[in-house]
Length: 257
Image (cartoon, rainbow, N blue to C red; front, side):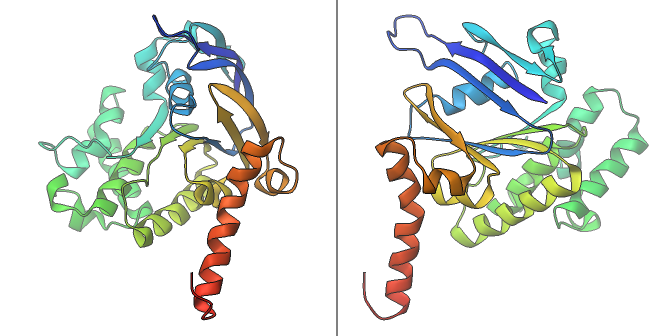
């Protein structure tokens, strides 16, 4: 489905590459999380998948096709992208925000309206209530739902997500994580998500690709990484969710922090 082959990004005047010979494969319908600290190259990797950033070397293949052979604008219109802060157009209605990519793709008005209503239902926002609202009238969680709906409006096979829930409160974040998993299953989406939150990665991912200093350190199922970390860095990352759970359990049991 999606394959990265020795993907590398170097910026002028910077000695170390932002991404260094990264090779990964993502199967159709898989949920892959790119995990690592700030500056490890995960967001740069995500943006190279839809050519928001062009690689210095290496390639990205989708269904065996080199994406450099495709028009970058058309490529992006067929890959969903969700990011922290959503970025809805404030002067446009919710319906217009969701329908913008289908409109650019030349869908007719009736098909766009049906798709908008379908997606609003899918993300739990009744169309008759939310279709004509402005983004400023929605809560942060509702705007993020609209961001997801907009990202999948053109029926993409791949969804890229860059810290999509990082700015939300814990309850809203947990709810949207569950909804994303349900959407992924229902639509058979292939998801590549960036996060630095280890607990989020463990809860959502089929596989986690741990990055450090632009390189892939280890990739595998969450349980495999917890059980057999490749090095101390991966071990420390994977122990964080358990430490948090142990602290919560101790507090709940009256043991204090």
